[in-house]
Amino acid sequence: MQTAGSSAASAPKAGFWIRFVAYFIDGLIVGVPGIILLAIVGGFSSSSSGQVSGAAIVVYLLLVVASIAYFIYFWTRPAGQTPGMKMVNIRVVKTDGSPITIGTAVARYIGTILNSIIFGLPIGWVWAAFDANKQGWHDKIAGTYVIKTA
Image (cartoon, rainbow, N blue to C red):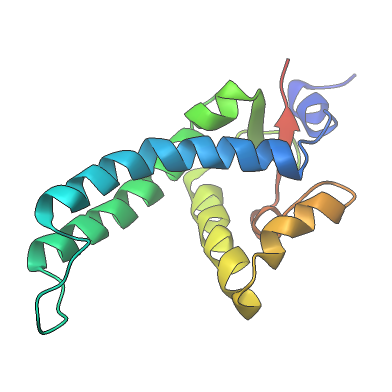
């Protein structure tokens, strides 16, 4: 007998481009308000001494925290989808098909950071395009799949 978790784990995996589109949408959702806030506080300009204002630094830090909270919150919901993932009908699950936990989400988010800083190239992201299970390095680190939904 096949359980819901095992059927989710055996579901078709989402490839690189559909995941890219979802991440791009999520980036807009988190980033556009941040850009507006930075423009308001003058975060795109520096003083004559080349220093960024204290308000801009606070906004930058808020953006980082907002991004972390956004992804961890949505990945750990029962649906396992950010709004961008929902728009393109994909979701994240553990490799056994179960929903991911906060610990798994944190490991996955740390993996997304590593994806971009290793060798200064996005190798960890692109890896999903060539991997048999369509896993990026962050998925391998956290033990997750991104699967297609109905």
